[in-house]
Length: 239
Image (cartoon, rainbow, N blue to C red; front, side, top):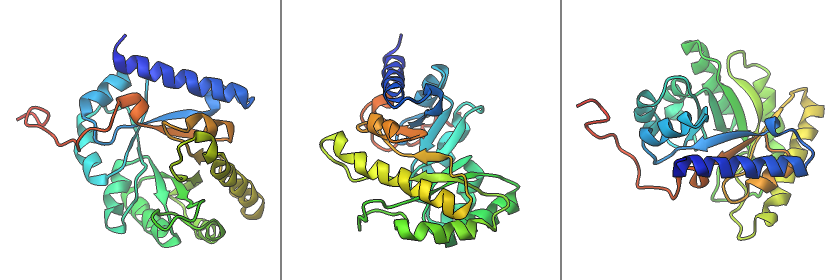
C-alpha cells in the first residue's frame, strides 16, 4: 500500500470512529480531498484509492488541473469566489462551497442558466465574526436564502464554515455547533432543507463530524504538507 493510500485509510478510520461516537452512519459523512497546490498525479493516485470528490481553492489552478485529472471525478470549489471568476467556476465545479452574498448567488444562478449547469451551492457563514475571513454574518443568511427562492439552476444545499484556527480541536466545537444550530433554525424559518454542512478540516475533522458535518475538507492529512503552488509542466501539457 502506498503512503498516500495509508493516509486515506487513516482519515477514513478517524471519520468512521467519530461518526460512531455521534451515533451516525458512516455513510452520512463524505470525504472531500482538498488537492490545492498538489499536481494531477496526486489526484490520480487518490482517485485510484477510491476517492471521487476533490476540492480546489483557486479557480485559476483548477482550470489547469481538472483537464489533466480523471474525467469521472466531482469537483468542489472551497476557496473564496470572486465575482469575476463566476463564469469559470460554474463551468468547472459541481459544488461551490463559498457563496457569501445574495449578489454572488444571483451571479452564480445567472451563469448556471446561461451554461445549462446545475451546481450545488453552500452559503459560507462567518460563524466567529472574524474580520479577516469571508462569509455571511449568521443573521444575514436568511436574507440570502430569500434570494435563493428565485434560483432554478443553482441549488442551495447547505452551509459552510471555517472556524478560527485553534491549538486544541475541541475548542472549535462551539463554532461547528453554532453552524448546525443555525441550519436547524433556518430550516424551520425558510423551508430550505439545507441537508449539507461543510465543516471540519485535517486538524478538527472528528469534532466537526460529532457536531453534524456531512462534508469534511481534508488536504494535509491526505496529500501531505502543502507544496509550492502547482503549475503544469511541459510533460503534463503533452509538450
